[in-house]
Length: 100
Length: 373
Image (cartoon, rainbow over all chains, first blue to last red; front, side, top):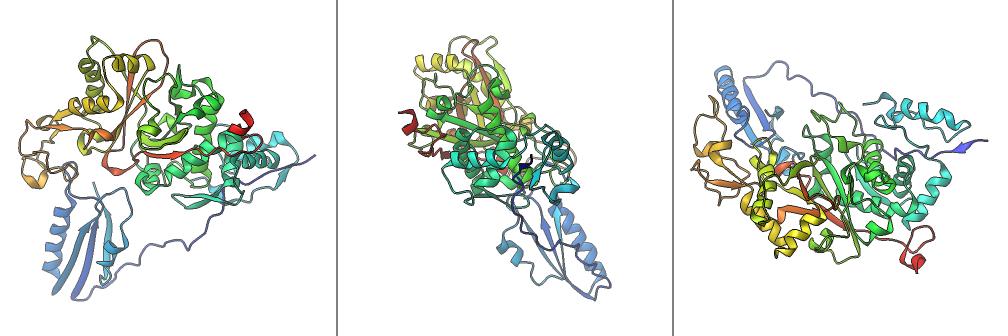
């Protein structure tokens, strides 16, 4: 006797796995870079807004022109809205997931 | 994440005894044994829902698996649920899918919170749910545990909320195995779903929260101010997300405690207001100190607090929620010793309470009103 079973996992729409972004490699003298901080500035933990300001200072010392887009998700627990991501559309690279 | 998550699932097996090992090999359980989702059992559960098998109940994060009624029924079968439990399970999953609940964040967070399913109204007695001793651990009752377990298995199998990757919960939460309570019909107040504006016989409220922190009535006299002050103290501990970011919190009290407060003229709203008044913390007690946060300047103020909180003074008393209605009050537990419990929420980050009606179909096996008549 056999027993029929029902798969409890449901249907998953597979998407292409998200590979890590390629390294920027040799960066030209002009650079557009973005920092997307994972949470608004808060009292606990390091301040990544300040941290990105320090990185910006370092970059300005190395490159002829540096354009920085810096923003934070309003709530760390939700994915960034499309409108927020749109601000970074012209950036050569974006550093995300910055948090305590 | 179990490697076998997408491994082929057998359409049938010849030996039921082989199911136990197979369920582990396929990663279909979080560790507890599960029943086999046999076709005839699943079909009966689908019938109990009164809905079509291919109705989509929700897309379950984080992998956004499609939870149809049949898939939910398969997990309910694994949990040992009965057909009459299905409407509650479906209502709970529907509630969790509300964006306000932020289910994706709840299942992935480092914080020990998990969606608590609170069943209230007529269904508590229809399903013979436990609402007395040990209610938070199922009360030794099939319905409580099976409903909570079915929800958990859907989140596990359909959403792939596996421990470690992607779930980052640091310490864990016993309620991740099954987290369902029923509100006591012995409450002096209306069921919580009605208090939340749902004019239905039965409702399900989901709220992502920590486990219950016990509040005994040590040294409290009969004065509601003093008794609720015991709970308020537990609500405003320094390590709580609510204390630092507000959000929502659950306060549970036994029926006799609720009746005592009712006899003193307190309704549920009065309890919420009194707790809002009492559950506060002096900013100076919770403001971080140290080289990175050395002062009280505005750039270091809490950004999630409303503007009416004066953060310039260390002596400001800050409530743990923004408004009294963010304190959810549920009456349940043994009618013996007056007790309360506090279940802190996730703070501002989500897991907020969502309430849905339980739609019991008029179909055989569902325990519908027609059947009961």
